[in-house]
Image (cartoon, rainbow, N blue to C red; front, side, top):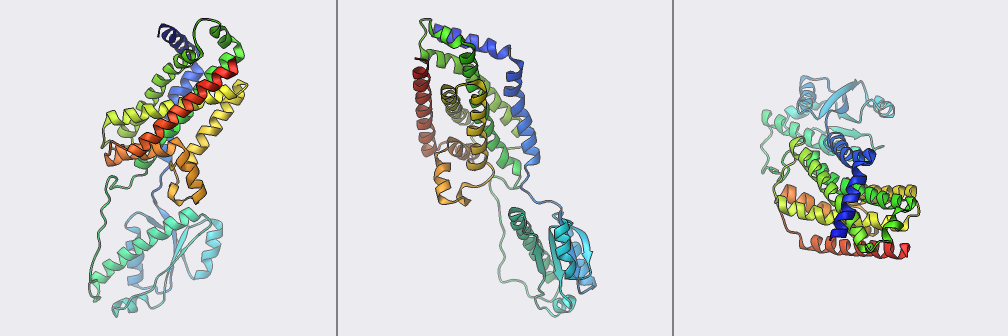
Length: 367
């Protein structure tokens, strides 16, 4: 342990004397959580909509005013006929259009259902689906309010939706836990791979191994400071998420810390394995970014649900540690569930395999 502590102290001095790496390790997580938490918003606001009112009645105008009252829809254009909808879509002036038929007021006055057409620009499939769902919900709500004012009979039943764990449906509650996995995987892998690759290029690592210290002790001594640094990054992200974006913490902080420590070991093992296989500092950095950032962002469920992906791709997603870590993070923070036996077993097995493979590759490479 004296040798490990001495090497860990040496690595701490390297970190403190390299302000660029220290800035990357501390400032990048803060910038990423502030940027992603503020920018990545999956909620729909101020949807630009064009209105084609063929009826030109007080009731049709009241209908469109009621649609704008919720704040989701903004009327940006009022067209004379439906022929102007396609040019507006092509020019990007609006994303959807409402067509109110002629005779709308008379139909509603008779107590009969009136058909209102919704047209959505489908060039962006994700936005189109969200906009269509929002418009249908808003139109249905407005139709119910008008039905209460007219002679239409009340519906035979009504439904009310109650959302648990995230009643305001805020995107930050979904994004910030994902940032913990993304930042920890990327920062740990990059810093660990760069630190060892730099020593290999400078020739100082071989000098250390000429001493009585063993290769396994070298690895343990070098990763200990990065465990502390990664824990600091996780604490910063969680503190910003809770204090700035209002992300709740319904579970146990102790359970969350234990899962974060387990995932940090996986990320450090990934960086060690990359450094053992990479021949230079530049290759190690590029490999660390490629292997950690893109798969974690796209395939882990950070932005896109795993269940919506093709079946072969779901198998790959389930093999990634970030996928299981995200399930645990969102479960502990949002749902208050502190124990996930399946995810714990998978993460522990991946930590053992990655660290073992990294130590073995590192030792064989230097020999």
